Length: 551
Image (cartoon, rainbow, N blue to C red; front, top):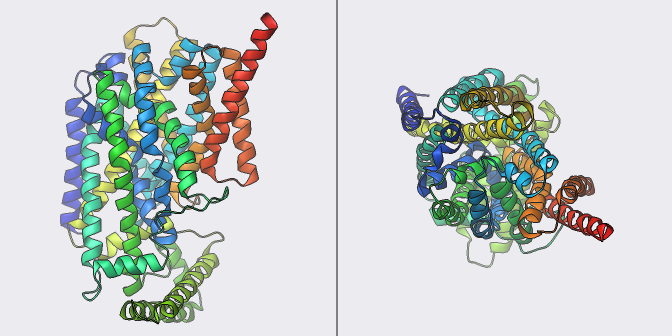
């Protein structure tokens, strides 16, 4: 990066962290450290909720996802607005009135200690694995820019986040999230403007959308129904709604955000804001990826986007022949695209579209085969957007985009290790180890747990290297656990006759149903439906049977 890029990056990150620590003064009790004394305004919670979900994975991997697979991933969010309305009417008032620190603390109030413990453990396993994925995303950034090893980059980022999260608690997390979300949105807008500006002078924005659509990159809506199809309207509306209900209603990293609210109304506003804003934000991020795809039609991309893999390929003896073949394929695709633009609207459009799509398939096959020569199962989706940014964006713009990626990563990681620490201390340590210690003791324990989970994330991050698209990986991981959590909270909220043993066994049945769905090849968005349904049905029937036995 250029000197100006470094200034923009360093200035952005310094301001974000300093502002968060400044606003977190007075976090000297457990209540203020973990719940901010319930003083947060709705807009701070709203942006913190959005920032927690909009990780660096969202910015890096979602754009790459659109490049290789189109915009159909946006359907994943179709059920989110409905979920937010439901949670505003149910979870928010219930959790606030219960006066709990964690969502799982409520499970003991409603059921029993073993159900609370199982819910806490499921969350710790799922979120503990996911935080490593979130930390690996910025490691990709530094790896592309500096050529550093993953272990070095994850350690640097991890230490930065651990520092301000341990010091300031939830207030530092929330107020840094607000600034980080502003930087992230500025980065999205800048990326969209720049990719359009960098298109050839004779290619308009409308031309770019036309070419992206003909290549299947604007496939934002798919009404076909297929259990194995990950992204269509039905999996998004139903599977996506269940996942959003579980994530925002049962995952402590989200619940803790709106537990800090000044009132039930303020917490509701924070969720409803996300119901309105989240889908458009994801649409624009995916649109950036689709436009980057069109840009690389006219400016041939590298054979492989991952720098280390490209270097390895260049050392092979037949690389000149492979490069020449690649250049021919890129040229044919470019000529087919221009011919299609020139013939748009006339009788030859169908034939020109077929030629264009055939050239794209040839190009994709060559790139895939080249990647397989370097590494079996090669996938460089997460490097596509970064390659574009660092190669073609002007001085200063690169620094802002990288700052946006860092901001997104820091917001997610800090929120996750803070929520992991909260569950560890409140649901396990305070409940089962030291039950009657002083407030200061639990405050120290909370800081220690935050540091522990931060270093745990650093240690686990390296395992994300070969998971392909990180945005898919993190959501698939959550779907392996969220269904049973959503099911047990559904029992808690809407089935008053269900008791602890029924809820506990129901959660185990829910996890079994998720495993069965996974082994059957069903799309991961349906895991949440299967897990929730199995938990509710099992919990209800078992409780009803036990009640009948007592009659």
